[in-house]
Length: 481
Image 1 (cartoon, one colour):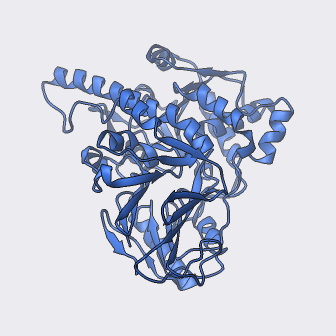
Image 2: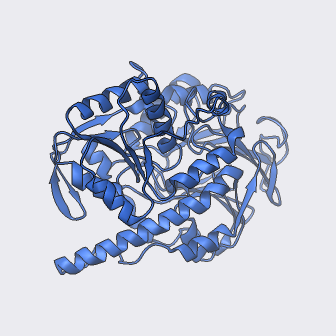
């Protein structure tokens, strides 16, 4: 039995793992690499031959966990893709949008490279097209939370709510292994049992007491744990509520006559911001002003939130029942087409612009940054983690000049960051989740975090719990004996 680490190792994006037992292989997540220094990996063939993978288990639909699925299918994967029902509903929107963004970016690069008389570092073709996405979507098989599912002979998986985004899940996988006697019991926590191994894959764990989404599920342990560590070495700022900080940023920017430009992830973060802005405007804590959600998928995602209201928290359900839906705001305007996006870019009055992608690695946000980043009246507001090497990280780090679409721009806009928005648990939240285990695991593997964050969390886990903890490297394989 072996565990392959194929992404998000000592860095944040590209989550992908392969669990191998008795000659069979199942993959957990299949995400896109988004940090600039690792993006070339997207063009490589999957280290595990796609045709050998019997099934794919998807924790959630964020592109750094799902964005290479169409490419895996194009390489020959034909097994089922198991995920929660909201994730399956979001998959069409997210993956088709990812294909569209890639095709738009390729067209823009071709045009720019022809103008500059050069070729780019990567092939001037998209990683996949909408046709590849349609082929992948036919393999999706939605499952319910909390119901064990037989994935393959000798393997069962249970999806529990991870509290990260709509439909996010942490996975408990029970495997019957012929190679020896393990310590798990498929019907209970890790303990006595013949030939069983229990695994936990956290996916991305959310924060407790966040708007919209339910809290993460506490589970009672496993033999082996693969845990994210995005904020493993730090705590989220708690000095002031995020709505107060947001109101301050908006009010100050409007007073200067500027725009607030917010790179967002299309699912959950965009809806959370609309939720907060609508509440602030309703309470007259900010002036009513246009809020542009420049994302072709926004209306469809909102409808999916409505469809799966049972996955939302009690506060959100109460607002919906009181006819104060958090997904609507009188000043909210959607930009679906490229032409509508250009009109947003040309808008010359105070406003809020929410646009993808969340780390500024691709998509329409780059066009809005080009238009606003050199004007000191404007604010570039970050409300999510920015991976090392991404454009968003370079702006957050206050580099005096950044390159966008091959051209240098001076960073003169005000740059602000509100970390409390994060959909990831901080160090305290991760330790709270681990603290619910009834028995110690054989080993904890830390992934989906920059090396410093993973090391910081590993030190605390060893000190507090005394558990063996490893930080895998890219393509490292661990025998599990």
